[in-house]
Image 1 (cartoon, rainbow, N blue to C red):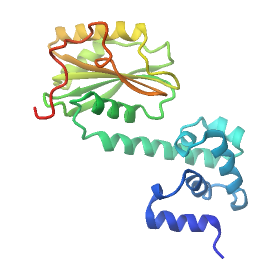
Image 2 (image 1 turned 180 degrees about the vertical axis):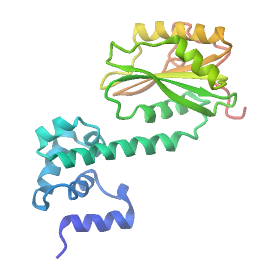
Image 3 (image 1 turned 120 degrees about the horizontal axis):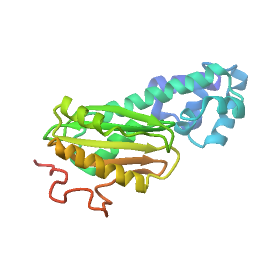
Length: 233
């Protein structure tokens, strides 16, 4: 008689990983690193603690080892899955045309997925709002990110950008912009404008989703006549 993990393996091979429930995904992954007799119990502990598979693979490795009783091999495996998932998400949105705030939010939400500390990203796009390049220009704690405006301008000029998007994340917190976020956006916009490069938007991601500063702009940060281009442009 086939055991549960063998049945899940067959289901995965036949229908793909997304055909499994979150609990089944955990059991299948753990079957490669835990004793078979312990797999279901450990998977139940993880599911009870985190609620979803995606949250579990993004968790702190030391914490999940301590709280859910998994071994180091399982913690490493879950972390690898998290990294692969992030890469796949970025690839899936890399061809998006960032000509709407919704597309920009989708792109940066994928880019920031799984980030444990605040990072600041600059993204160059061409006149048609297709991606040229994205790069992390600063990283650190919530209060410690130092935005080097000169680096943003140099990045824009080096990549012959027509427009620049900037984005940063608020890990495990609200995506609502702070006073410091608005002030930094204003300084960056003016510096880019002096170099004949236009700031398209500032996307902030957080535990509750993503915010476009252009959409919620109440501080005259953006030129109202230079919004995103239309879909048929």
